[in-house]
Figure 1 (cartoon, helix red, strand yellow):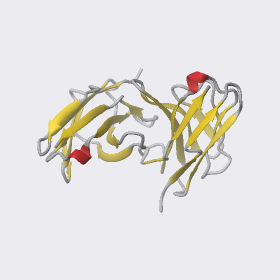
Figure 2 (cartoon, rainbow over the protein chains, first blue to last red; figure 1 turned 90 degrees about the horizontal axis):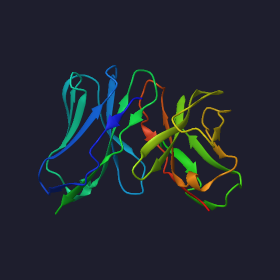
Figure 3 (cartoon, rainbow over the protein chains, first blue to last red; figure 1 turned 135 degrees about the vertical axis):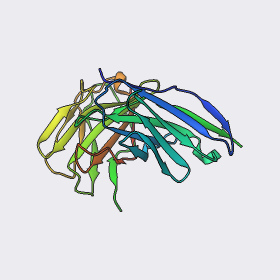
Length: 110
Length: 113
């Protein structure tokens, strides 16, 4: 059973701080990793993808991947109240369907 | 505008009454899929389709049917809905199975009483 684990939260951070969201996965052969943001009652929105070890930056977002530790994270710098949402980690184990984590709820306090 | 369109957005129905949730995408995507999302369980895949006339079961296919007669449409059919199928449903699409689900529909909130 391929699994993707996330802390459900809520993770509360003050406005302007760095939010750190973490995810571990069980399938060592996984090659593609994604972060989605989902506002309450809305559909998931793809915000980051990462395929190789290291960091990938896009604006205030940085995805980090460590395949040896089977660990992927998302950092949000200068967190804003509008970043308050549930963040879903998703992993693609080869050419098979995406496996989602249950999500971490982030709350940014103004 | 590139989009995945689901209908209806909200539906309340009674146990055993057949229903269909439609999903249509305008991006010529090959890969389409259906998910349900429940509190504490996250997103779980119901069925997916790699192309026209090619469908396969996801993690929770029991009680659901799908069809893919045209590339743009991928309806989800509940032949005899039961209360445990009360959930938030999402349709998603991508260029191919090798890509990620980049586009999600707006969601359908289904209540079965």
